[in-house]
Length: 427
Picture (cartoon, rainbow, N blue to C red):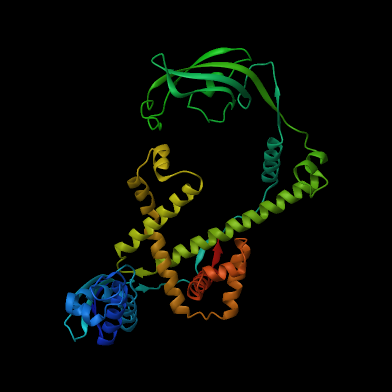
């Protein structure tokens, strides 16, 4: 195959290659087989017209575009392999010549993966991580469990922060009730900051049976534009005031919150073990992040192709909006309730996209430098691990992922391990 790669800029160039007469004929046959099914030619049954007759009626050139589209993907892949380049975006294809009886000449404007010059990525030094767990942290976790087991009991005294009031309310702006501002028998924990700023504070000191007017000013960024920054009055009726009644911290409490323990002392020991494991995992994650960040800083990438950052931004946006969709929130609804636009979301993902692209490029460069070997056993172990992680059948993972994808992921993990396993922590 005749192929020529001509570099134009730091990360782009023109790839020129030929479509042989053999491939042209292959493409023409495929193109004709597709169009002849719909041809109606007098004297021939539908779909049975000979190709020679088609050429006489329409000209063989009528098939050229479809023929090229049929063979182009295969030939482009072969051309980039022969040229030894790694494109990072779809090429812009141009037809230079399509002379009958001659090989066709095609050019492709291609953006390629940038060169990465690795710096130090082993024996890096990162800040020492705190893995210690204090008695205070254990007691704080225990107190959270106690709060979660609290019961609400009616109290006659005035409401305090932390109490729950059961209320009816209706909001008015300029003495006119507004939409969405009404609720009945609503349980509101005072101090939870779940209502408009200033609302909950004005219910502190109220008792069951009280009727009060709560004056508030909606935040400037409030989602309902007609209320944003506006003053309003809520007419509130307090039906009940309830206080939290905490359970005693004893052995019975311990058994209630965890059926694997028998005593409060055992519960505390289990809490401590869980906190230790959590801090250890957080420390390992922080070390990995810091080490990878250093390896990326130590590497040199002359110029990052804009298209790679653009694609990463949109990949992140699509993943985020897909997760929202899975929760029943369409993109339109998300933009409405968050008070943002697609442009805002794009800007939000721009900040991290460049870092993620650089990180992937550096890790891929380490893969090339280390020349990791991946065996069939490694691939099967990866399949089994993914199946366990996502609660899937191994066969389903096998069908969803190719050997190439699995091998790439394994090598990327090993590159990260190559960075992390030699890291030193310093206070």
